[in-house]
Length: 88
Image (cartoon, rainbow, N blue to C red):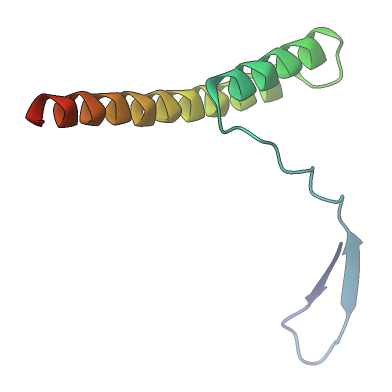
């Protein structure tokens, strides 16, 4: 991916091109097991010094938030189903 920036100074027109890394592939985090598997991957990468522990901490925090949201959706669905059965 290319990123181009220009200086605001009109007297000197310079363009710089910065080559950015391609974004990582999109992960499937649609189940608790998917999130758990990704957390384990981050842990292994930190243990093998492929990523910094501080980066691993940030990623696991985000994954934990995704897991909490997923659990909330599942629980809300179960409650709605139970309430629906009770009304019948």
